[in-house]
Image (tube, rainbow, N blue to C red):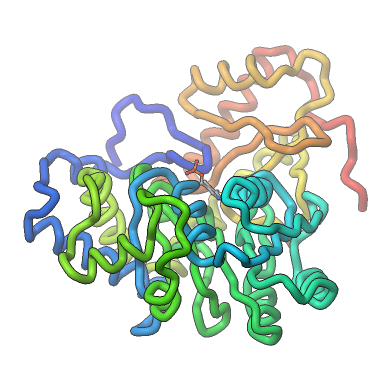
Length: 378
Ligand SMILES: *Cc1c(COP(=O)(O)O)cnc(C)c1O
């Protein structure tokens, strides 16, 4: 795979894309041209297929970064007098709480420790304690720490108790198994620039068809009105307002590669191998992962910062950047950490190389031990 001298992005999006995906952007498309509309329609069909949505689910694409689509999903699916439960174990859950407050949707912010997954038992207890809750907004892989929440269990609890479910599957879609049979949801949000390995610029909401058809009038925002976007697309096959044409074309190419690779099982396996290679290599250098292996999603790994006084993230970042790898700062409130992504058009070889780059950087910075100050509680 030829990438020129671009650094490898080990971040949770934007991420390293393949040459074919980049090349798909070397063409201009008319936004109401039939050929472009065909690209949008085929893409939407493929995205619904990835979760086994069949005829009961539809895909509504939306311009903007992933957060635009999360905000649109909350604003459209939750009626103005609804009440949303957010099991909150990280930064992206906290963002949903903030969205609910902006949109004046009543929200129950259910604190879950950042190193513990949200489970069906936690959610079910909260729903029973507060029957006025109408919807659960659940982040699947909480990219803050990289933890995997129990989507299937939570979805089944929602079904049992008759609650709506909105899933932020931004960093898990296409990499981890999600099937509407096991995890029935009202709406699920993901975006072009994550595990589908497209470029950033569009999100999409996979909605139960009945929800997409029945939620009109809820939206607080014209630009984020999913019901209207859906109705307009049904009528015209076009996006309302200028589509991100190059992003859509790149995503079409990226989804073709996803299918050729073997779909979600193959992509998930590649990321799992990336993740295992990374954690093994970093452990050999003395680093310690923040999460227990059982709850670690193979998407992004949080490592404790070394206790060595010669360590600081800025220098560490700059020196691994010089060696061709872009790392990501930590996003935890209690402990100093940094993150390394496992996703993108990369394989275990890149993970071995980034470990070498980190080893050289440690030497360069005069850090003898990468061991953290805090040992993880057993
Ligand atoms: C990336 C991500 C988002 C969206 O972030 P944007 O910067 O708006 O693209 C939302 N939720 C999760 C879990 C994510 O990983």
